[in-house]
Amino acid sequence: MKTVSLIFTMLIITTSVFAQDFTLKVWPNGAPNDNGMKEPEEKYDGVRVRNVSEAEIYVYLPEKSINTGAAVVICPGGGYWIEAMDHEGFDMAKWLQSKGIAGIVLKYRLPYGHHEIPSGDARQAMRLVRLNAEKWGINPSKIGIAGSSAGGHLASTVGTVFDMGKPESSVPEEKMSCRPDFMLLLYPVISFDESVGHMGSRKNLIGEGNDWNLAKKYSNELNVTAETPPTFLILADDDQTVIPENSIRFYLALKQHNVPAEMHIFRDGAHGFGMTKKDLPVDQWPDLFYNWLKAIKVI
Image 1: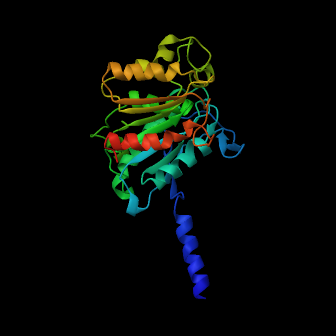
Image 2: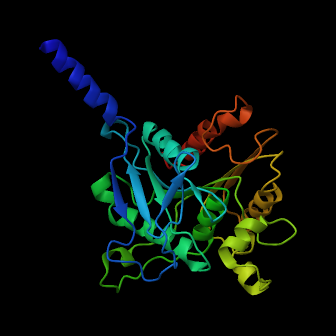
């Protein structure tokens, strides 16, 4: 019996490490707008999802003994028509959790012609994390945002266009700032300039028209200010899907405004590597990011 009890205890310990803690609806009382999707949400090819009509966060909290107080809201990519929840979401959250950092994966609503929907969900997710920071063992001044590909566009949208909350609001989460304290951007879509941007992401977010005023609103290299948070960029030189100039333009804009930034361009890796192992130098990026968080005194 003692042996069985010991095995059962070890199973509990093993499954509690690097496991999802809970899931929360981003808009528990209903979203203020509708993306028009009436089809049921669909999973395919692993845990990629489409037809997303309700935003949720999946929360992975670290063990108290290693908790750094930092947290990252993670926006998976997928061109604004699917979301790669595995290697650009859950796998990243588990790695962060193992390093004492709360990983919070956002399944945002896809736009379907409503360009304001994804960024509205991401800003609300930032507010929810701040609202629950004390309860979850998070320092409210150490909450960052991460995103890959189109998720990087979403993260950089929130990192360049944000508000500090509405203290006069009667809704608790609306009192919270949605500004990230730092950003992690992996091979991000940044610009909607036709010469460099990823036109699939642009079309899926803002439609097929050539309204430059709208495209400019989401060309995030143009929205950087001195208040944009410190940023860590990872990409590959051989990325033919989202060309490196996206990240380079963003880095130069950050430097123009004296925002702390670090960028690594690896020779090989192509697009979409996320947390997958390619047995290439690009696999070093998580440790580089961790060291950068130390350098900027987040952890």
